[in-house]
Image 1: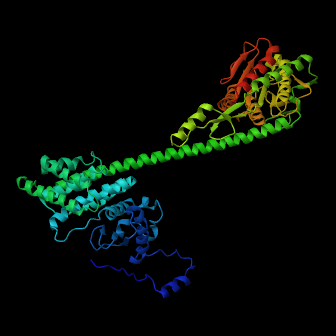
Image 2: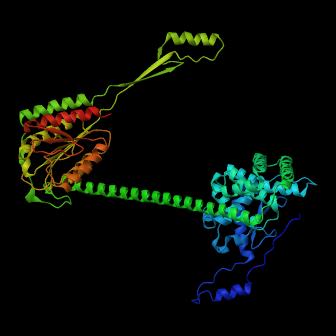
Image 3: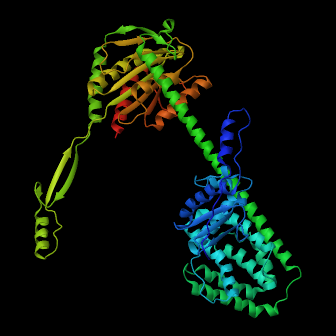
Amino acid sequence: MSAHHHVQSPSTTPDDDADLARWDDDGAPPAQPRSSPAAWLRVGAELGDRLVALSGRQDLLVTCRPGTRSGAPAAFYPTLGEVEFDARLFAPLKPHEIHPRIMGDEERYPDAWGVFVHEAAHAAHTVWTKPAGANPRVLEAALLLEESRAEGAHLTRRPTDRRYLRTSARTLVMPDIAHPTLQGIEHAASVAALILGRRDVGILDAGETKAVADLCEKVLGADLLTTLTRIWTAVHQCADHDATTMLGHAQEWCDALDAAAPALPVPAGLADLLSGAVGVVMNSMAATDAADLAEQAAANDAMASRSEAQAQDRAQRAGQRRQAAATAKSVFSARGTVSPDGTPEPRSNPVTGTRRPTAAEQSAASRLSRALRAAAYRERTEERTTSPTPPGRLNMRAALARDAQRAAGSVPTAEPFTHTRRRNSPTPPLRVGIAVDVSGSMRAACAPVASAAWIVARAAALTDPDSLTATIAYDRHLTALTRPTHRAPEHVTTFKANGGAHNLGDAIDALDHGLALSLPGAGRLLVIVTDAQYRSDETAAAVTRVKRLTTAGCAVLQLTLTARSLHLPGTTLLHLPKPSSAPAAIASAATDAIRRTR
């Protein structure tokens, strides 16, 4: 076949272009791009670019125009290296709306793309050439069998194209069934090859093709259908260049039909029966594809919802961190009581003054400091390495083994020198936050908690310069009793408990941000001294913060002083019948927290 040249004349003349330019801004609606054969040149060129990836070949030309020389929706000409494509497959889209070069644009015209993928399968795998003098009937049978073989081979290379190969079956097979070139038994055999052959390469499902399988078995008989199935199954294993094997299977196909056809009656209206069965298959395929698309759309929507929820969660957490930072800044920067938004509340200040620590408190701080240093101590780590040369301690057994290997003529692998490297393990610092309830029911806790706050802060400062502690008294408002600094406090801050309501959530936020209780790398402890007799919303706000801290690895201890106290979920509850034992309990919990740090 001789080469074809496609020369397209321009859709407008230079004079037309000048006239349009003069009227470019006349207020009228913009001129719509015209659909002409020349306008499809770009679409054909972009299809050619995509054909490289689909077929693995770079020597092919794609021509796209309304109508084809062959009359088929598309065709591949092996001798020309050309794929011919009918532009009407893109209807109702216009050429300026089609951009195949953009990945994903094919989602807008899946039927046209399915036909294109089918021709790409032929371009990649139908590369055997017919020998001179081949029997036309045998050659026609070989091309019939090649339909499913080429698609099956393409599916092996590009399994994600299965969706488009299914749409091409609806576009290409139905017209062939409705306007057959074969009659009678051969027509039924060709339908079996086109439908059931695609089933056997995994393009169609067995349930979808049942109507055609049952009709073909009834018309052809079980024995002949089994023989034909064996033939196209063998064809599916044929190599792309093996023309001899392809024509041999095609000859076997023709022989099987010639041997069985005379004994098989042809049902009346066979063409209509076959068209109806294929129509059932196509409807089943359409329903399956629609269900798959709906499932995929639901999965995409669920993923989008999860992504949106995650984004909202991240934004919410970022907002909470900003709010916690603002709360910590307002509490620890102020010299008195503040509301969570930073507004000073001098009349609600529970602080009654300061006093010098007693000798017992100073002694307790010293004991706690020694206990914390002991708990934070980590043994040095040892790392032993071997080498064939010094430095290191000589291992005589390894040295003799190395000499023996060398004497035997083998490559010496023994390493007789051992070197031990010892490294000091850093001691973890301590972070302790104390939140004390100063509502009216907590009067008994004021003196022991004030003492405990000073003891813990003093001991932490003496133990490690990186250790930090802080204490916040909370009711409706927040008051910093000790602040997160590296300096040991000089005086004990005393306070009273006569407040109302409970703002433990914001107190935890301030301590978390000021002491980095959510971050690893230190012994972390949050002590909450409260009877937990809160409203439901106050409890919920506190439990949310406690859960976040425990999930991050921070120990949370709740100290209660009365039998009427409630347990905050997520905390370790410790009931103290004697309020004076609170400093020892807090010190013990701090020691355990730093000992568990790794």
